[in-house]
Length: 231
Picture (cartoon, helix red, strand yellow):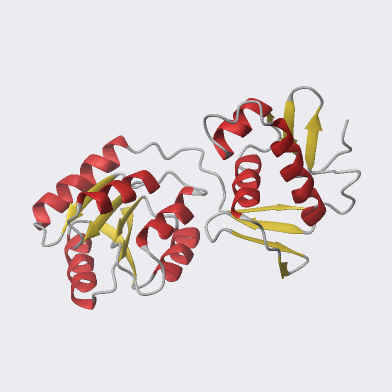
């Protein structure tokens, strides 16, 4: 059975989708808000997500960003917002397709089948990464150290996310600058050194002798979950 997560704050739609999808062989989980959706996704690992944008606690694009921090699961946005700007925003956030309410069940099912055919699910990263006394929850976009929350700036989070999603791999300075800062920052190596230093101060036992966020001189940086001495 294909695992599906349906997220909508309208009880009638949630119930109708649950009944229809279950009748067609889906293993359905439901959530009425964004926080519950992210928690369900982390625990039950859906193979497809049907997501309403207008949730009571989190905007749907925030939920998509939380999912995209650790999974490539297909996301089909289902929303009453018909403005093209909303569609573009959702797609840019990482959604795979968009259906506007009111919708036909046959069309919705066809779009779900198409997304599942195209899905590339092997090798997903775990939603929680641990190193030392630090845990990084990629789904909830939350970092804790020794049980206490660690506050990161958006740039610090983005940099940490890229590093922990590639454990043990050397990531060049050029790649990190492109992924975190974008075009035009190819030579901003000072930015990279500054933010890596800030992450070390917040997450390493001894920032002067990092064990997990390592520098490869002249090349880039490497995340080592098990830890080792920096070169």
